[in-house]
Amino acid sequence: MNKFERRMVDAKEMARLLGMGTTWVRLQYYRGRIPGYKLGKSLRFDPEEVLEAIKAKGGTPSISK
Image (cartoon, rainbow, N blue to C red; front, side, top):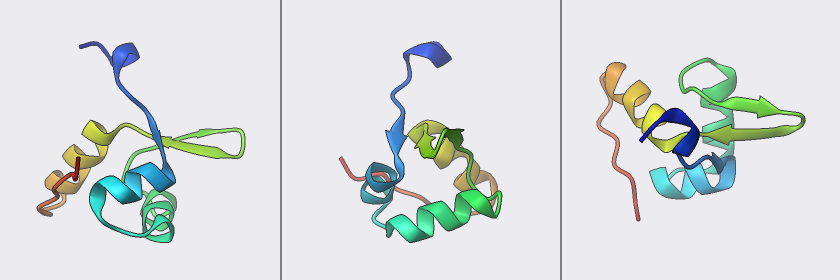
């Protein structure tokens, strides 16, 4: 799957997938701890990129389905 075929989610959905709060997700983005994309006033996240970033920093993430 190429980058253009990946599913992008908003902060609320990313928080749900990680089992965290929306505020936590946004805070991690603004602190540069997880990757995301700012589109106007909206934030979008690629769940695969977020998982890779958390793993690279020594975390053990799991995504809820």
